Length: 204
Image (cartoon, rainbow, N blue to C red):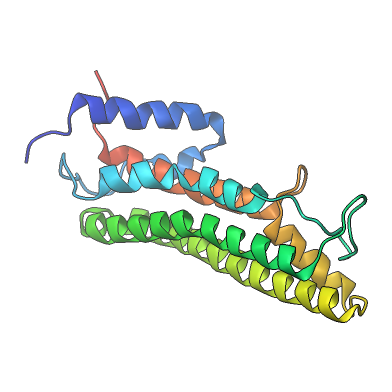
């Protein structure tokens, strides 16, 4: 098979450089077997997985919450059921490109997996499952949070489980500190990028 183009190699190495020291170098060790110089799916996976952090971030901060952490109306806001439903629909739209990119990454991983060493394949599979799990958590949390909020707005009843509401909002809305979702996504992306490094020709 022909070698990967130098442009492709330079592109992935520039991505790795931008991620910097956050990558765990133990995941980027030389594979147990000599890989083919060109592997189907590696280019697509490396490109699409690097877009996931931004897609997760946009899905989680596209709309500022109109309720506080305890589910109460935020200052200077008067949310109603119609506005809440519109926000829920708009949020769902931001999840579509995230879902599509995750599917593309899964397909690309399936394509290149037979050519990867077993340890590398396991690391990438684990990281991919983490990303898919975070997506499912985000979808579920958004759905539950929207349903609880609509019920409160329509009935006027107080939140019957403030702790659960807070947990949901921590998944749906990004936070400046201690953002476990963002940290989990970032680590999984870094693991996949580092795992693919030995299978990409280093640019001259």
